[in-house]
Image (cartoon, rainbow, N blue to C red; front, side):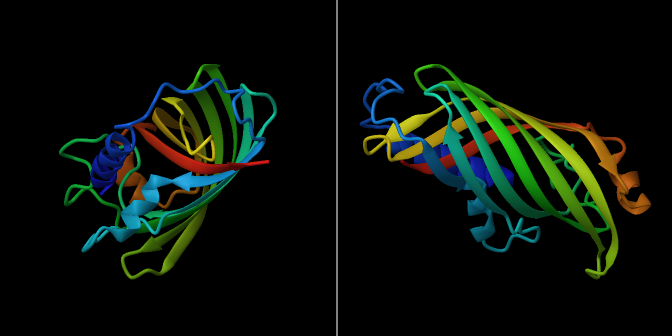
Length: 207
């Protein structure tokens, strides 16, 4: 599912940058605030996906300076496989999923630093409150996971800095993960507690 989203996003990026000129200075048309989301929400519309992510993300950011940005985000998603499985033949493969699903509600805080033109690094702390359900969608427990995400990317700006898109490479690491049901823990214990994936944020700037 995520591989399909990545492919669609790359096509959109290449299409939108055919006539893209050199990025203006970050001081051009400077706007303090933004709202945004992620192209991962496209995964909700993949037909016949047995593991539909039910993904929702809403971002709100404030530019303290032209180089420093703080943000708050809210994320909701459902997943049915160990989140440490890397992209490859094992990702979302039959027989490797959980005996059920987990739902995440994750208020998030973030900091982004621009270094040169649109090039940036960022860090996010996701406080994920998890609800675990068995194969009959019956609740079997609640848990908590702290995800720390690191991104390296570039911001493309469109329409006089009204719209932006931020493709990135990210690494998600979870140092704290509590109250995972034993049936889920047995499935995920052989996988890493980190995951490398693209970042696909977009947004709308305003004053």
